[in-house]
Amino acid sequence: MSFDKKLDQVTSRYYELRDLLSASSFGDAQEFAKLSKEFSDLEDVVKAIENLRRAQGDVKELAAVLADSSADEELKKMAETEFHELKQTLPTLEREVQLMLLPKDKDDERNAILEIRAGTGGDEAALFAADLFRMYQRYAELKGWRFELMHVNDTGIGGFKEASATISGKGVFARLKFESGVHRVQRVPETEASGRIHTSAATVAVLPEAEEVDIHIEEKDLRIDVFRSSGPGGQSVNTTDSAVRITHLPTGLVVQQQDEKSQHKNKAKALKVLRARLYDLERQKVEAERAAARKGQIGSGDRSERIRTYNFPQGRVTDHRIGLTLYKLEYILDGSAVDELIEPLIAEDQASRLTEVG
Image (cartoon, rainbow, N blue to C red):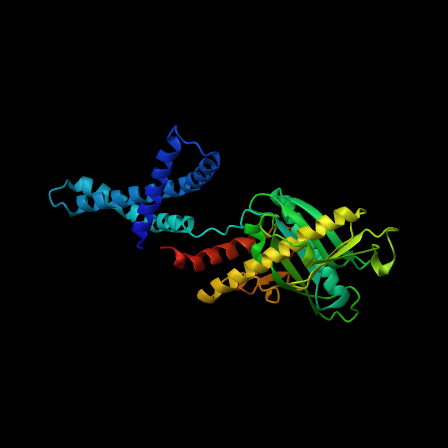
């Protein structure tokens, strides 16, 4: 289908929905809500299409004036200036419409579960995992999102072996979905007397939060173990068996939760994480199929992919997927410059998906 035909189709559907919704005989409330959402989603797109078509029509009219040998010379000069200005804006208007027509990721508006684990590098990796966790916490605060701690397994010296949180708000997953992967750090540990730079890593996973309606988990597929919570060094921090470990037998996924004093609350949190991980597995299958058909995709969801390096001696952060380097390490780690990494990733992903339009 040509681009123009696609625009005709979208516009036609918008006015069809407008007429349907204005009909007083509409009886089915559920169907009405569904069509209302579709109509609302198309509103901005149709405005952008009409702006584009208005500009295209003006360009044609001005071209006709310029081609008219009997036209007044003063009028022609004015027409020529306006013609060139409009010609320059057309590609921008076209791209705006194309981006609006990109297939939407149905998970973009979901909340997310953030999981960070220390990788290679011992204590230094755990300290870096804690740095990353705080970075996303500050970023969430700046965005006005709710950041709720779910689980922390700390080292007792300021590092995190693993930590997880739920992040709730508008468009959370859309902005954070490209953060999944291996984050590498290069810095001189405080305990390093010779000043030698160490390289360590931490793994970040950002999962779209799934509801029960998205993923149905059979009780028979679960093994649930309860035990006493433990703190750093293994010391008991709870005198009751409130910690919960859930194993999903078909996939082998294991989720453990011990931060709440109530076994019931720990089980509910563990199920929430398990549901998100199972949903993410399905999502990764779909993404892998899409990636096979589209080269150079950003954020395939591969957790083993090294995506970014944080170099402390040089104060730089490099995103290896798009070759972006920023000398703003301090501002990235305090959350204030994270958008400067995320925006180019979103733009790159949009550019790679533009080929799917039409």
